[in-house]
Structure formats: C-alpha cells, structure tokens
Length: 350
Image 1 (cartoon, rainbow, N blue to C red):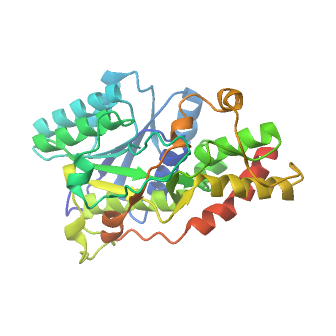
Image 2 (image 1 turned 90 degrees about the vertical axis):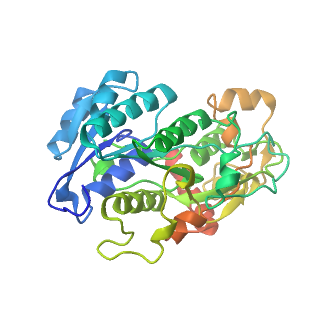
C-alpha cells in the first residue's frame, strides 16, 4: 500500500448517507488521487446502493447488525473509516485481524466517537479541558462515558499490533453539508445538536435553554471535519500530511493510545447558541422576544429525542493540539458558528 501509488488502496466506509460519513466520502470522491482508491460502502437499501454504484462506488446492502458481512468487508480493506457500535466495531476488528494474518501488514481503522460529557445539566461551565496531545489525560477518561468502551476496544486492538487505529473526536459540528452526495439526495445534510435545539425552540415559540446554558462545548464546521479525515487518510497512505512531501510536523502523527484527534476551533456556551436562535426567530417573525427561557421538565421530555439531552446540557471542553500539529487547518470560528444559526432556523421553516 505504501510507496506504490499505482496500487489501489481499498477503503471500506460506513455511514455514507450520514452527515459525517457522506462528507468524508465526498472528499474521497474528489480527492486528487481518487483514481488510486477502491471504495466500498455499506448502505441499508438497494435503491440507494444502485444510486451509489452509478457514481462508481462499490455499494453493499446491509446494516451494523450484519456482523459477518462487516468482518468480510473489513478484511478486504486497507483502511476502514467508521462510526459504529461496540458489536459492529468488534466485527470490523476481527476482519482487520484476519487481513493482517494473511498480509502481514497492519491495516488502518479511522473511527469517530464522542466521549467527553459530564452531568452539568446546563448549570455550570467546567474548567477541565482535554488535549489530544495529553495521552495520560485521555487514557484516564472513564468507561462510563458514551462510546468509551468502543474506543477502548479499538485502542486495545492497536496495542496487539494487527491494526493501526486513529480516533477522531469532533465537538459540536455545524453547517450544511454540501457536494455531489447531497445534490443527489443520498446524504443527510444537517447536523444534530443545534438543529435539535432549533426545532425545540420553534415548537414552543421562543428560544429555549437547558438549565442556565452555562455549559461549554467546542465547535467545528462540517467541511473542516471532513478535511481532518482526509488529512488522516493521506497521512496513513503517504506518510505525509500535505501530499507529496513529508511534513516537518509528521512526528505528531500517531496511532493507538496517542492516536486521538480532536476537531474543534473555538468553543461556546449553550446559552450563546440559544441566544442566537432567539435573535433569528425574532428576525424571521417566529418569536417576539429573543431572550431564551429555560425549558420546563415537560418540554424537555416532549421536545428532545432520547439521548440528545446529554450532548446539549453537558461540558465537553477540548483542544485540537495534535490535529493542528499534524497540519489540520481550521479557519472557521465560534463567530462563524453563531452566524450559521440563522440559516438553521430558516431551513427548519422551509
């Protein structure tokens, strides 16, 4: 795989119709070396699979419950890009281990997780800030965190030597995804956190906040998340973070225990997001008062899908030190995120 650019790099990607996975796939399709990639994706429906195939992508019909299929597809890949549950992760790792046994070359797994939340319930900011360069700090993250058991299994696999693992941890991702997959109606173009808060606020006719909204999250634009995935893929394949020439920062590029990469370029309180929603609602004639009020317990139960509250009323502070050290350049800031909220409010209305 390395050093022979005429040889196809087999990539297996899950979540191709999703917000993140679709954005990553779109990056691979327009990559300068896309002709050296052989990309396979897993989708649930035959109709979508045939649409993807018409775009030159190998599409297999299945789900994360098809564990034998996941193992098989992983075994055929040099690189797996995934965001999956524990059982699916184990199946993928089994396939990658089988590949290593037959080739003697460790394949790579690039996984996406979210493991940093607390129980602030919107009432206070945390002073704990994680750095993706601080291996000891990351190692101490408790197993009780969401999806933590998945990334622990993945890191253990790396320690066994049969796979190289890279874990990307984005903050609040914002912005509308765009590109050929969105244009074709194949990819979900919207994120979860901010649109969920927007919908809940519109349902009650006034911007709402969970608790006091004092909790803090980092933010990152969807295009820049996709940039980080592309950078990691390039680094895996070419041992370089800017194409042909080795990077002076390449020593920061690592895998396993030190292969965690945060995606963030600024942070915000959830109150600031709710406040921006309130201003947009007033501007669009959907509310008379821009000041957010606290969601009642009844509203919280009615207006928020199960599992979303913990990612809206918690703290998840981090710094993308390693990501930036390996050459990831994020230009959009918290100001850009807050400006984007008006479009989110408007899009829900359409």
